[in-house]
Image 1 (tube, helix red, strand yellow):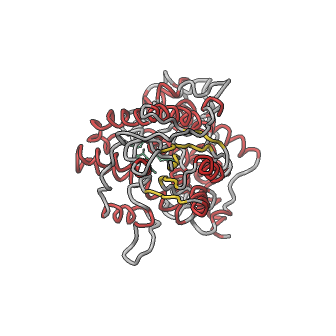
Image 2 (tube, helix red, strand yellow; image 1 turned 90 degrees about the horizontal axis):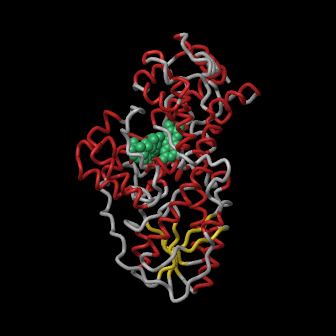
Image 3 (spheres, rainbow, N blue to C red; image 1 turned 60 degrees about the horizontal axis):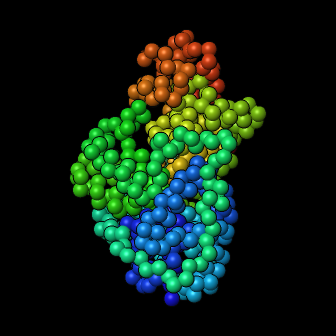
Length: 458
Ligand code: FAD
């Protein structure tokens, strides 16, 4: 009988342990199910649909080169897979394990109906195996990372299979074009294709281009104007390259110099470790009581939120970041922190609204990474700075040399000279086309601290 191979956020042939196991057992039916119901509010967002379309097309082409097409289905993943098993006579499903709460539920439900074999490979190590001396789980990054490193390097990647045996009869599948994953008018993704090549080959190419820059990563990773980081995040989210492959290549390239990069990779594992312990972390504050913080939710707050999404806050670094996000589906990490801090502190708007916006606009939107980072910045998480730690956007912009970055993304400011471009309003040289500040830095800071003081007094 054929075996089913269930693809999710592991859209690759190399170091795909579920595929390797399936190939060893008989004819393989590879399947992807678009399930927009089980994830609830975390159904795949608009920017990621663009990515998914191209990534599935690439995976299908790679599989066809082996003589098997990718079978596409839509609906409840557990029901679709059960149905497909009945149609094809398959009695076993191989898949890579994932830690999003809806996938954990689907895995246990499917496992009750059929022989489901789950493999590791979405993280560097299975999160529930990274334990304290006393057997507990970690909630802080640094000790987690120390313990994770004890288990590194990860197992060596398994090569892509040499051959995949097709089944005698293929089940019916849907056409990718019928899924309408790409935007129609207006085509807000028009600029995405210049930036990204979704799929396994694109992931490998992005990584190859980054490796020579690995040595300079620690010095340049905080400078948004420079191509200092790997930009692998969407590829890693969709599993087009495995974390183990990434680890082995990076560690081989430049041993000690690789540490700062590997540490960031460790953050991915950490966020899987957090949502595995607290599945509702995307909604619920890690810090006791913080779900009741009095975020601004009035009309003025709504207008501020809209200005933030559009990149018209009057703070060049925030606006550049939000426009980069809209144009490319990605934002530099340093700028994500500044923009998130500005939303939650200066504008006093609920981090969950920021999380929602990012969810829909990021090509790398990831349940764990998004929620853990938002809560880290907002001060509501297990491991986060106190709420009272407020980033000064202008100082950040100066310190991390963002002038060229601002020029690229905020064309109104193109002609403002260097020292003033970080804060043209203050210097009195803001062009008329550039919006006024939603709130002054000192005023915003004081309002946030006052709200926190009132909240702590209860
Ligand atoms: P590199 O610096 O090259 O790092 C390599 C890889 O390590 C990344 O591709 C990513 O997979 C991982 N990584 C790096 N930093 C982090 C981090 N802080 N947390 C978790 N993983 C990390 N990242 C996402 O993948 N999806 C998200 O939805 C997401 N939302 C975020 C929201 C906020 C408010 C903030 C502050 C950060 C968020 N991040 C998210 C983390 C980080 O900004 C991106 O992973 C990073 O910018 C990706 O760029 P890169 O691939 O060039 O990173």
